[in-house]
Length: 299
Length: 289
Image 1 (tube, rainbow over the protein chains, first blue to last red):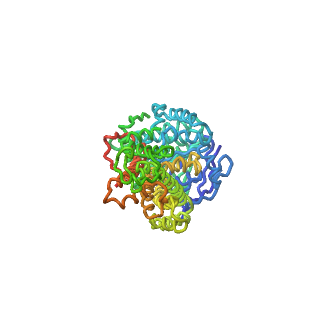
Image 2 (image 1 turned 90 degrees about the vertical axis):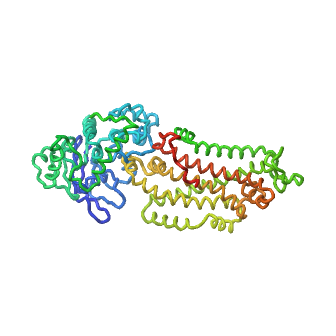
């Protein structure tokens, strides 16, 4: 059950955004894709599942378990998605349908792939909610996304991705939009779930400090090309490329706040505005959700 | 289930439901029983005021107004539901083609909708009746087409917006095919916008039936209809003003009920609005204005 990406190239309206990316995720491995904003790491992940936006084309090779899945018709890919390969997205506020209860969304892929009844899907959803350590799973499945805090919603998204016990999980910056205090808990959960199930993990991030906590090896991307790859420990000890060194600097700079000694959010690497505001929003959001849902996030 | 409960807990929703149920009930009863035969002319009983046994009085031909209104409710329902169905099918189909297909088809549909929206319902009705003659079907089709285009115009960008939202991508990532994504994620999320448009369209259909019947494009004079009754009686408004009030009231209440019901449906379908109490709401239904 290995994933082999070979010479992947993605063009968006004539512009090459990912150029010749190759990496391998052996069974049970946890591989990080790391790079700054716009380095093509998210597009690479979307290309694996055939979810590229309109106007983007991917060439090269993506083999899942020896089978070429790049360019498969959507119908065949849909059978893989959620069942063999699950995905967690960056923004938990928008990744859940506001009009459907949490339970129905967690049970959705089970209903599709295993064709079980609505009641059975709900029963499975309760079990999955408990597995991702959501409080009071019996009752939380009847709630709507807006009644949950940011961290709870990301746990729901993880439960959705894992409900069918996929062999590979792709996590696209799953903690970036979360409160710093909540990040650690979600990361630990993700790691333990992946480890316990013997799943493979592709973890996308711009934060080397986060990567070091979950991944064993890493692929560093810059402008759509692989600039460095290897064991995470080796990258941390002896980064060879300027990008990795810069990322390492960011990570150490933010790992400990000079005065308080507390880890801080918002890395300079991510300067193009987007994510700083996402972090702010997540804070405000979690605070706003307080009245509706008790703020629980014990790591 | 909970949507219905929320709908009932809203004052506007309750009013809308009651009105719609009342009209439907009256129409059903009129199939088996009306106080008088709505078609029977009685020269000795012309222009009676509200009295027993003519509760709402009689018209210029001595027909019982209450019976005419009851039978006319059937026409109203046929027109409102018919136009609603035509508008829904046409509107959603155009919106789906305009949002989900390849770029050139999308642009083409958008231009087509922009052109069609320039035609008022009345013009469409005249064009249709010029070919097939005046009938209720003309009303149904012209209002249905007119509002179908409106629905497409409003729903298409909404569909595009939802299509690009993360939860649709997440849905695809968990293995939903296009159809499943459409029914589970896309349509429910455009429903609020669509419902308001639809209820408005159905209300306009009721009005248009009255207006088009008056102009001769709608129901034949022999068919009991609120619009025909209103246009018959308004000729005598200076002499017998009270008789005009009854069909006018029936039309007004039905239109108001449909509008309020649509607005309440939109509100009830949104769980994020569900927790606020009715008393705390200062929301004014925008469509009625």
